[in-house]
Figure 1 (cartoon, rainbow, N blue to C red):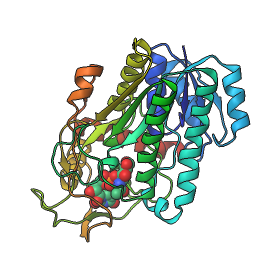
Figure 2 (cartoon, rainbow, N blue to C red):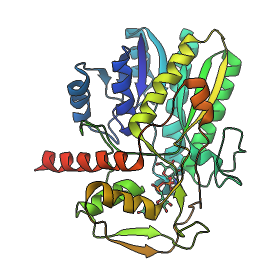
Figure 3 (cartoon, rainbow, N blue to C red):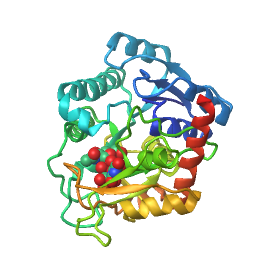
Length: 339
Ligand code: UD1
């Protein structure tokens, strides 16, 4: 069965492609390489023994997208293609709306025209903002997103709700908490362009000596150690959830489905706990300094992922330390590659 994976060479996309191939899906990737690299395709082939079909173009190019749908009997889509830098989205919001939403609508139009169902959307826990109560389950009220990036996720969800209702389609919204780690082969991982914004890539580059010191954004939060708390989910566990969600959609007897799942571990870890766990797991030092809070950051977010366990038969299996070990192996691989 052929599945379109947009953004399939990106961080979460590439790990998901590997799991799809392992589960005998034929994968067709469309990725414009704006935040990914071509060698990832070779590495997917090295891991799985299969080379996915790959089209390098921007999904806003409708005529090219139509050709892909004409060439393949596509039965579903996992949509990862999107820009994701929170700060950048505040400076160039129009680029975010155009890239993240026009691309999405273009794929959905093809689904509508050709009567295809089974659509999985990469959403984010960012749609909840600072929730009033922890843990966050799928019924936790959504709050206005802080960033334009976050708004594209909320709007994307709204577009898909309408799409599912008006055209009787099967849709799943997956709300990721904080994805971390790399493939156990060290052949896939996160490729932050420039200075990383996210915690784990920054920690990793600091340990590798690429960055001098990690800045911890705030130690005066009302948490146990004063640093902010997140739910760090291992990227391979996350990838497996996509396959489980896709199988559920494909096997569903309902014509119209709109499912929403939180994907997290259910456990919150503070910034300092992540730093300590990284040091312990990899026996390296991560020099850090305490800095003022980062604008737009929330205090705490962790998931109640019971619904995914009950309905998808999926749960997070990898510990924070195990995940952080894979990140370090990936960093070593990247270093060897550039030497
Ligand atoms: C961020 C985005 C979120 C997005 C997610 C994607 C914001 C406000 N939110 O989540 O919308 O879906 O990335 O992965 O940007 N930290 C430091 N020092 C650093 C980097 C981070 O102390 O150099 C802290 C942050 O203050 C935060 C925690 O580490 O408390 C996690 O930060 P990060 O990895 O950027 O993720 P989020 O902010 O949770």
